[in-house]
Amino acid sequence: MSKLKNLATQTAIYGLSTILGRLLNYLLVPLHTRVFGTADYGVVGELYAYVSFFIVVLTYGMETGFFRFSQDETLKEKVFPTAFISICVSSIIFMIGMTSFAQPVANLIRYPNHPEYIVYFSLILGLDAIASIPFALLRQQNRPIKFAIVKNINIFSNILLNLYFLLLCPYLLKTSNISLPFYNPAIGVGYVFISNLVSSIITLPLLLTEIKHIQKGFDPILWKKMMMYGLPLLVVGLGGMVNETLDRAIMKYLLPAGDIGMSQLGIYSANYKLSILMSLFIQAFRFAAEPFFFSHAKTTDKKNIYAQVMDYFVIICLGIFLLVTLYIDIFKYFIGEQFYEGLKVVPILLLANLCLGVYYNLSIWYKLSDQTGKGAVISLTGAGITIVLNILWIPAFGYVGSAWATFICYFSMMLICYFAGIKYYPIAYNIKRILSFSALTLLLFFVGWFGRNYFYANNNSLTFILNSVLFLIFIAAVYMFVKKDKLLNSPA
Image (cartoon, rainbow, N blue to C red; front, top):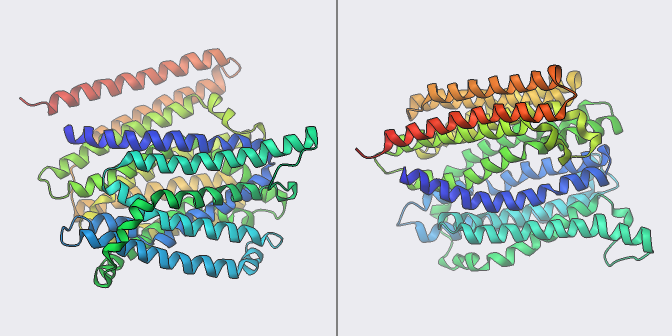
């Protein structure tokens, strides 16, 4: 239990910083969904989908490779400079190449009048990739406080710039005919990307203390080992990004051209953001869990620890699912009213993210056993499912088809990873307990959903009270589990 508490503490520190920062960052969603129409917001959703994909390419598994090889005391001092210099070189080449061919790329993705978008995003991607290894060093050294400070400076600067360009400047220009510096109304949605770029530029100098570790020197032999370990993880990451972002990247090509397709994309992207609590928890957990799992890889009770971690992880995710779905009438105010028609996909996307989180937990078996190639196969299988289902279902069902494709993909990957783990790195997960909590959660969700839509649809007060009762039932079940678990794991 002490080891679990240590993981919980690390997750909480990363989580508080991540949740605080990302919540503030996500507060841009209400701003963007009120300043921009559904079609313009579709531009934001699509281009950030590309960012998620390319950041995986530009880091090519080096973060996990860094954690893996940092465990070897004979290599420890060389790991950071080797990984950092490698990513620096590849990122600089990428930035030069993309900015040189900005116009052809803009033509390819149907933004011929905005090649500057390509320039902005190539620089954002390159700078963020370079920063990824110093951030990994902070995690490996168990320094979540500095990690949090730097991350939040990045986020706060982005928010302030968005407020400056999208609220303050237009307001003063309209009410007082005052034109503030660096503002041009014609740039419009481009200011979302400019703000992000400036915040990425601000971040790197804050990591100079970590970057100075490169003086230990680049080791080409170690680099080859890290590449051999990391390249299958690149495939894993690419498959993951196909699963996470392909729907938003291709939606406009599979729906009617013009504002209809972009409007659907905008509605879907905005409602995707309502899975924020689940996404934030999973991200905070991953920041803490990856170094935690590797640090316990040589302990005798590691598999018991991993099983217990899974129990608590799933329970928290199920609680988040219930919280958002039972109180969806409150969470919906996070986005503009014109996006409300997409609320029906929120439960599907939350369950999809839950399956993805479980998959991240399960995937530890191929990372610890150096069988990353098998992880690549699982990821490619998921990507294949995503591609086929999106191509089939987006034209037929629009963004609802995308939501179901996402769920089926992550659910399939979770099952495949679990059964492969039984064969190659068996861990005695408490499947009966996990399924019991899942069944209880779905029962409470459907009771709340039917009540909200059929029995007391027009009574918001009654909806809130009865859904609160349902949520308290879940909390009571969790309390009983935790109490029993403490008794079982307490010393005799």
